[in-house]
Image (tube, rainbow, N blue to C red; front, side, top):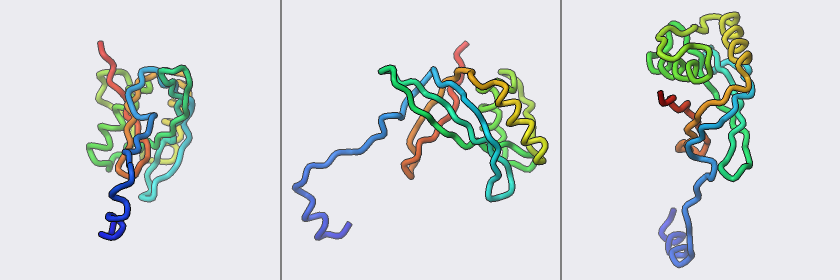
Length: 142
């Protein structure tokens, strides 16, 4: 902002804008997943959740989950494992994950996810630096 703009606005009340849907939710219902491709030729599961607010209302959240491939970075595989465990296609404690190395494999992973539609999981929803809401699965407490 220019100095003139700052001077003009210095006496005006301001407040920080915060998205009210950020937070921890232990009651997000997984609705569905569809398959999409990334700009680099990989695959994503476009997942949709219904998230219940504490006041009894709900909102829909869409999350893009990169499906790990053989050549994926270890961090992508770790994130994929966390989502697969939270959504229930890989058992808790397992270290092996299905890899989306082909269109057919990616289709099967999304089909497996959709068999678990209706499952309730915990989500941590935060705002990224561009203002978009991003979710991560919350770890289950045993």
